[in-house]
Image (cartoon, rainbow, N blue to C red; front, top):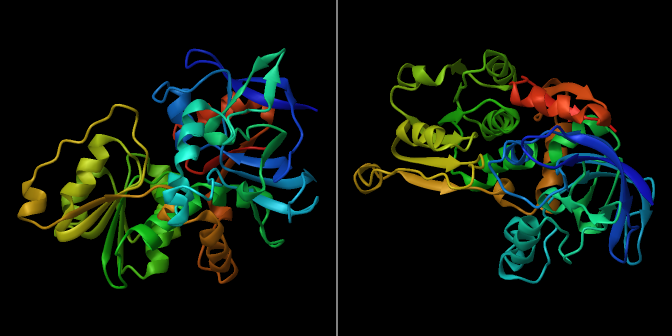
Length: 359
């Protein structure tokens, strides 16, 4: 079949919307009509040339849509509303057996190669192979995926809001819920108030943190963070005043060495620092052993919320139904597929809300 999609060719070129050839779903797969795709930091790493991926490539790995067709041996049905997960996992490797499909070994190989887990892309343009971002490539009208990558969605959540659940929410709330030791009554520090950082703030609020300090140079994003539960906000340069004794748990929601070092610096003795944001390839963190051997700090990382998305998403939906998790106010501007390049530029420019592309 033919479908429209937006292609990334190089960091020096604009994103270009074209008509691709897309193979239909095989056994265990589904065809999803995309309704909304969130512009995520991982996509921006590729756009800026900080991550090298095969090209031409369809970006996009955070989104929601409706199933239009299914292959054999699929429990989902046409018309079902779904959230896209970029980590279906093979189900057989060590990480998958431990319930960590985001660390699946075949998946990691597929992400690097720009393919699905079976090594194919099923997309082409004028006979040339087109690759997929993060084994997904959903910046398109339609996408074919493993049925395990299409997570069922409640009817009471709009598809635009649900797009945020596919990566930012699973990552940000999961960082608190599954990767950290944050306890009720403690102080949390969130470095970075972008989409993921705003969900970390919400995760800390849900976890019962008494103080939630959020820092970011972007004033608009900080105001969003305040509305979502941050008790103190400010510029990163003001951290010594905002959290003078250090945080019980600090989260780096950006992923650059400078922000990671800042979060670790303002973690109290015997506290914990969690690296949430993804760094550019080749980045290195300069560590002082004194922070660990003498001050007994813990430094850890989290990938996609440190839980199986199929397990974590239903709990997020429970949070939404109970009024604990906010989505609507986190939405930023929406752009049609033909203006995907403008959407990505708006996100790069620091849009306070999550920028969406709506095919």
